[in-house]
Each structure stands twice: as structure tokens, then as C-alpha cells.
Image 1 (spheres, one colour):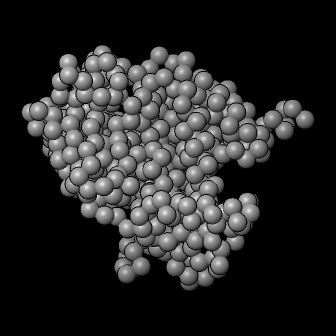
Image 2: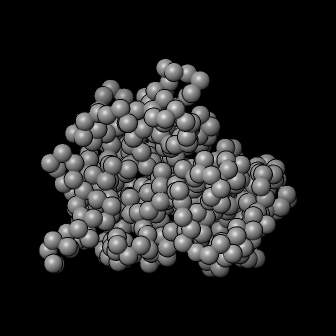
Image 3: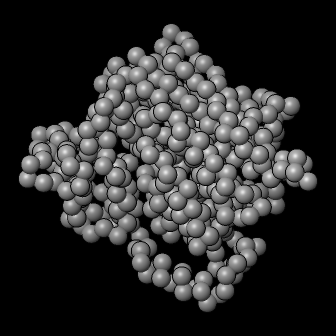
Amino acid sequence: MIRLKSGWLIFMLTVVMLICARDVNAVPLDISGIVFQDANANGRLDADEHSLPEVVISDGVQVVRGDRWGRYRLSTESSRVLFVCPPGDYRANGEFFEYLLGHRNGDIVDFPLVKHDCSDTFCFLFFTDSHVTAEEKFNAVAGMKAAVAHMSRQEVDLVISGGDLIMDALRACEPEARAQYQLYQELVSPLKVPLFNAVGNHELYGVYLEGVGEDPCIVEEDDPLYGMGMYREYLGPDHYSFNWGPYHFVVLNTLGLTRVRNSRGDTIRTYYGTVGPEQIEWLQRDLQMVPAEAPIVLVGHIPFVSLTLTFEGYHDWQVIDYDLEDPKAKSFVHTVNNTPRVINKVLAGRRIILALAGHHHNYEVSRWADNEHDLTFVTGGSICGQWWAGDRRIAGSSWPEGYVLVRLKDGRLDDLRYVSYGWRGYKERQILDP
């Protein structure tokens, strides 16, 4: 049973206000706008500034290219997130996306871009599994501040996160889940370079809040915030792409939502690793806009491949019957179940050089090299280690709290380093500082 930490009256007033502020169902929208070079970085198209032709715009389903005057038009719906995929020598001035909930039909959404220096050689950081929370036991606020300060001292062009950014929205009431998202945004705000986020399973709002009697925290599946909805409101699209120099980055949502039967025979909601069919269709459309020779970097929370399960050992709870209508439909929960389709079919003939993931809290590097590929899979450790208790430990191995420094050069992966930021978890402090 979920217990409320605040009074009933305050909670119910908050719920009423939030419900009144948003539509219950997605509504069709016709959105248009212009993409332009924001030379003075003021966010407006001024008389002496010019539009940028043929820039790619998407809502995560459709992918369109603007015309020669920088104009685009898209028929979409209010549950989606509109985003721009800038050319490699441009980046967004501010956010690269616009959450469409609350927009009206016919609204105009412009995208200001600024020129930036880029080349085929640059460095970026990949961090994952920060699990931020204000709960004092974990001391996660101080830990995340230390991690961000450490990352800010690195000479890099951008930062990418790999999901599980907050402690848990799966079981949290709406005010608590929102507070975690707001805390994460506050803690990463000191980063001075662009940050691109990926969604993790702990960002999925309300999935486990079902079948708990009269508790007001029950979240129905038609709630626009359910699942990915709250993530989209705070952090933008759950799958998207962007270019940096000659490299094309594809940030995927490697999470599927389904119903399974628990040990008591009840049907419950849960997640598992997959790239869903609608997202695959989007990816195919996205790739049509990308030169065939472009090196591609994939990002997602649940890994495409993993050695972790071999070291931990395979257990029944790692496999689910993800389709109740098909008893043969089984899937690993903690790796992507359709990796061959994504890598060998959808991305066939493409130069995938790197696939970054999180979820397992350990640092792992494996290389898949054959006649078609030279691809490195990386599981990026974790900012929080063993959920802020100390170093992550698996079957006799251990990893400190940290992140990954990546260097790309000449269209290839040039260097990888796992970097510890020197944090001690709360259990380590209890031992070392009695």
C-alpha cells in the first residue's frame, strides 16, 4: 500500500489542479514553424537573420524535412514531443524540443539554432543511473552535486545520460514523482555543455500504482502522464536523434510496457527490454534522412547485449511472458529482446560504431566485429554505484561510482575510459567513519 506523506486536503487539491490543467485524451494538432539561425542567440527570428533550409523535424512518429525557406508543417497530436534534429554544425539555442500537451491546433513552434565549431574528433561524457532523491538516507543530492562538479571539469563538447535519472516514479504519487524530476533538473543545471537524456525504467510514472484498493495514487493508463508522459513533460522526447559533426546519434527508448501474471495469478503492469514497433518505424524514417556513410552512435537504457547476466547467473525472474495471449512469447527483462532486428535489419548496412546503455550499474565493454560491423557495446557503470550505498558489486567484481569518457575520431571510436569521481556511499561511510 502506498502511503501519502502530505495531508489529504493538500494532496487532493494538487490532484484537482493538475487534472484541470491538462487534457485527459490526446487531441489532433496541426503544428507549423520555421527553423532559423539565431545569430544573436535571443531566441527570435530578427530581420537580419535567415532561415535554415531542409532541417529535419519529428514528433517521434513522423519525420519531415523543412522546405528551402526553413518552413515545416506537421499533423501530430498533443501527447507527443516535437523536436528538431539540427545539422552537425548547429545546435539548438535552448531546448531542442517542445512538449505539445496544452498546445492548440494551428500553433506555431519555431526552432532557433546556433552555429558551433565541430569536427570529426571530439569528446563527450556518458553517465547513467543517478537515481536522485531527496531522501536523507541516500545522501544522493550531495553525491550528484559532486558528480556534476567532477564532470564539469572535463573538456568535452556534450553530455549524454543513460536513464534511471531519478530514484523511482514507478511507485511514486504524482507530487513525489514531480519533485524527483525537478530535483534532477536542478542538479544537472550547472553543466555548461548540452545534455541529452535517455529514459530509464525508473522514470516510468505510475506503472506499479495499480490494484491498490482506494489509494488515490492509482494511475490509469489513459492518464497522459502514465508511463512516458511525465518524462516527456520534464525531459522531452523518449526517443529522438541529433547530429554532432559527421556523427548521427540515435537515442532510443529501450523499454516496453506490458502485463504479466505474478505468482498469485494476478495480472500486473511491468516493463521489459525492447525497441517497440512504432519506434522501429520512426527509426527507419529517421535513417532515410541520414547519409549512408554517417557513423552512428546508439543510446538506450536497457542494453542490447550484456555480460552481466552471465556473471550474475540466469534466474526465472529475469524472463517474463510479455504477451498474455501467446504463451511462447518470452523475453529477458534486462536486455533488449529484439537486438538482432534492430542491429542486423533496421540498421543493416549502416556504420554503427558505438552503443551506450545503463541499467546494470556496472562498467562493461564488448565488441561485435564481423563482416558487416565493428561495433562496441558499453554499459556505463553508474553515478550512484550500489544505489548510493557504495561500490556496485556483482559476483566478486566491483565498480566505483562514476561515468564514461568517450572520444570519437575520424568517424570511429578512439578511446573509452571509466572515470570515478571519488564518492563514498552511505554504507561505506558507516564502516569507515563510525
